[in-house]
Amino acid sequence: MKITLKIIISLLITVSFMFADAKTDVKQLVEDGVQLCKTKGIEVCLKTFNDTNGAFVKGSLYVFAIDYNGLTLAHGGNNKIVGKNLYKIKDPNGTMLFQEFIKIAKTKGEGWLDYKWSHPSTKLPTAKSSFIKAVDDNILIGSGYYK
Image (cartoon, rainbow, N blue to C red; front, side, top):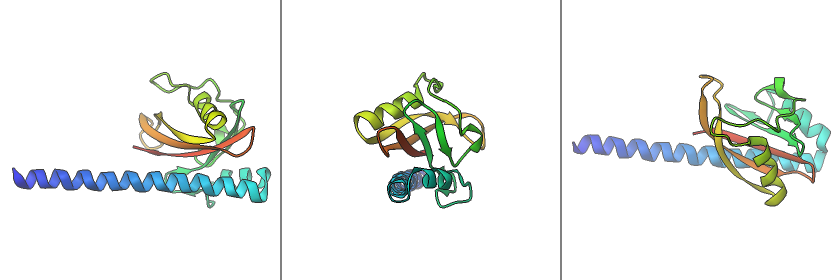
């Protein structure tokens, strides 16, 4: 029994560190993206975010950009949704994802949102957490990790 408990505790600690690293990586990716937009301009940063082999795609992490009307301007994980308006998209729990992203950007400037999103491997709705940050008064960028 004691060995099993030690194994379980060890696994829980390992998983906690994995999520802490993912959360830190996501936030840094977004911060770096905002900095790129402010120094190089919106056109350059959107092109960079859309490059699936570029600096803003790191394993399962990628940056997305949307305007405050819900139009997808960049998406490092799925270029097929660039140019699509996702304002009315909701997750299986009814969370209006893009409306919530916009609300965070407009009211707080930045923040986290927990929701469910289709996992690229399983295609099943999976818990995800994204960090959102306003770039200017009409564009936000974000990135997230699966939990």
